[in-house]
Image (cartoon, one colour):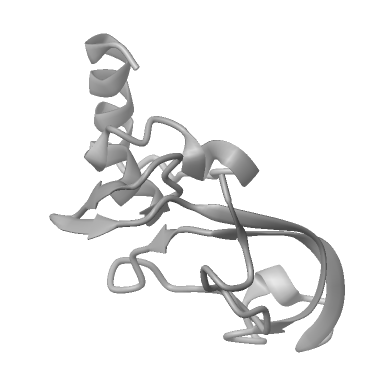
Amino acid sequence: PSPRAQAGFMALLEAGMPIVALHHSIAAWTLWPEYAEALGGVLLHFPGHVRGKRVMDGGYRQDVRYTLSASDPSHPLFNGLPQSFEIEDETYLMEVFEDSVTPLARSSFDYSDRSTYSL
C-alpha cells in the first residue's frame, strides 16, 4: 500500500482499533512486515524471509475434510457450537506467529509441504 495508507493503518492500530482480517487478507501486502505482525502471520506467494528467517512459499489444498477444535470452548465465538466439529474447506500453509497471537481453534489437518500445493 501507499505510505499514506500504511500510516493510516498503523494509526488505527496505535489508537486501539481491533482488526477483523478475513480469508485472503493474510496473503496481501506480503512485503510489509508491520501488516504481517498486525495480522499474526503471512502467506507468501514466493519463498522469502519472515522475521529474519528464510521460509518457503505458502501452499494450499482444496476440498479438505478435517476436524476443527476450540482451543477455549468458553470463548464467545464458540457459543452454541460443539467443542469440535468436522468441516470441509480449503486449507493454507503459511507462517503463523503463535508467539504473538492466541489461536481460538486448532485444525487436525497436517499443515506441511507434504500435504499442500505450492502457490
